Amino acid sequence: MDANRAPSTETAQLKDQVAAHAAALVPDGVILGLGSGTTVRRFLVYLARRLERGELRHIVGVPTSEATAQHARTLGIPLTSLDDHPLLDVTVDGADEVDPELNLIKGRGRALVREKIVALHSKRLIIIVDETKLVARLGKGPLPVEVLPFGAGAHLRWLRSLGCETRLVCDEEGRPILTDNGHYLVMCYFPEGIPRPEELAHTLKLRPGIIDHGLFLDMADQVLVGTRQGVQVLTRNTSP
Image (cartoon, rainbow, N blue to C red; front, side):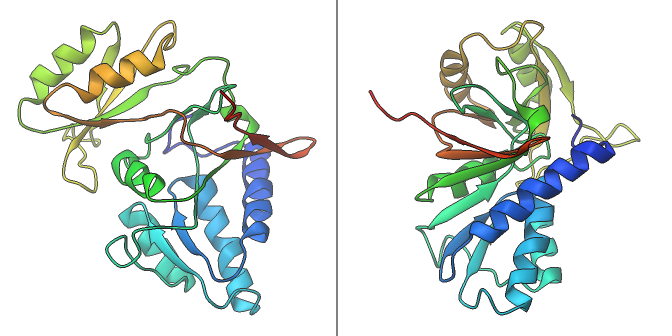
């Protein structure tokens, strides 16, 4: 689903369901990574309500985007930074796609680099999604890739050599929309999905000018899924 497109009523209800469930699980006294996206926005509302009721008194959040930071401040959620708290207890974030091994595609909302940095500094990463985000193979929708503005055309040509179609994210007037880090965002469409995500992630990381990509592999500890039957809890198998 396009990050800017309004969800259906049913999908919105599932997002609300899982957001409320996740907020109810947050214990007092934690340093909490605050993800980005529509489901996390709902999570922040429920988290703020717990603060208002006095159920939570000693939590602080590290936002993954300027939009999340602004929303959290509006709701009265206290914020901090990785500079002050380099090890977080848990991060709660959304995802664009979740495969059966709990690998993710994230970042269609233009926050993938900061989301990945915050997740890497967290003891646990909990993902909250509605059931429409579950896929058999990653790449059902586009893979976001953040690139340097310098040589952007060359970066797009190279990305197309990997077997995908590319689209530079632009505003209505055709101007590239910058990420919070001042870079461009490219959406990569793989016609048959992504058969070998680990190989693609490695290839992307080695390319100068590619800042980062939206493949979050072996990172999620738990995925909470809003479904018509209630919240489903998926836990990553970490056994060898």
